[in-house]
Length: 328
Ligand SMILES: Nc1nc2c(ncn2[C@@H]2O[C@H](COP(=O)(O)OP(=O)(O)OP(=O)(O)O)[C@@H](O)[C@H]2O)c(=O)[nH]1
Image (cartoon, rainbow, N blue to C red; front, side, top):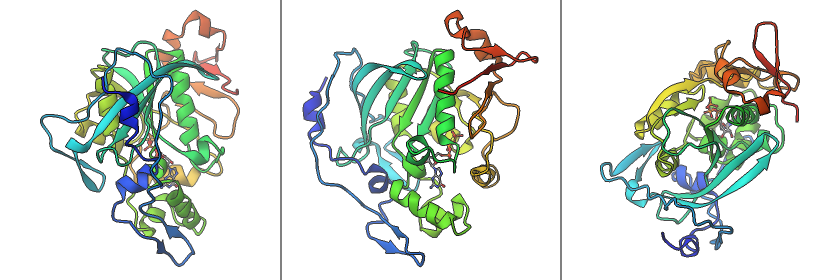
């Protein structure tokens, strides 16, 4: 196993999404609305030191595959020879949702000039398993940190964590791809345009940015690192399924993740359904009332696998659906 310190010393601080995914935008572009889109924001080189590196049996993962030379990702070709996803460390993390294994990785698509830090949040033993429920989740600072109600991201993350907590094995792979890959500052620029009436798709386009520029090579590499043979993806997004399948990931099923629309995210969810083909039909495994209150799990699979330890959290309604208060 390569020395982790040596490995990390070549990486610069993040700013990954804009630097990686939108190489066309290397300059400031001022729009009429006083919105700037910021392209290549590489921050100063900074040595990263890993703490708590374990002697885990997992070896670093090299993203190079022998067969394919290039992966078509978003709007650019990525040279697989320059892709590296390295396992750094694993720890046990107690959370409000339960106790999880947390695995840290460093992922780079340009020989380590820039990198992101994907994490795998795991409950149970996923190694070598088939049909593992997996949520591939992209960062949303506005909802997950600030509690924004404009989207459904934070609730989807919470639902996935609750699910794998109640029903192991399962995993959430969390990627630093803010704003569907355009980066936080550009997402704020998009929000600014949305205030003027644009929807989430048109706002990106008005900024000259792609609708979605996320790449998922790190997901393939993390699954390989863990020896996971197939997954059931927790998503409503057909693009995500196609992108992952395009990387050779074996997706044998889909677990929907439905958040009930609220006052502030109704339009956002409508746009996802109407313009991005998200499968937001009713009657799926979970509902999350956006602005608090009771949430409902409709998944009989979850109900059946809930252990007696966890069962004390649960109530059943008259239809036999699990009801529990996720208020934490
Ligand atoms: N550009 C942009 N990104 C947004 C906006 N609202 C949320 N996001 C980002 O959207 C990403 C989540 O993507 P979504 O399209 O909501 O959902 P998804 O993950 O693709 O699909 P699911 O797997 O079904 O949840 C996160 O990275 C958020 O930061 C927005 O208005 N504009």
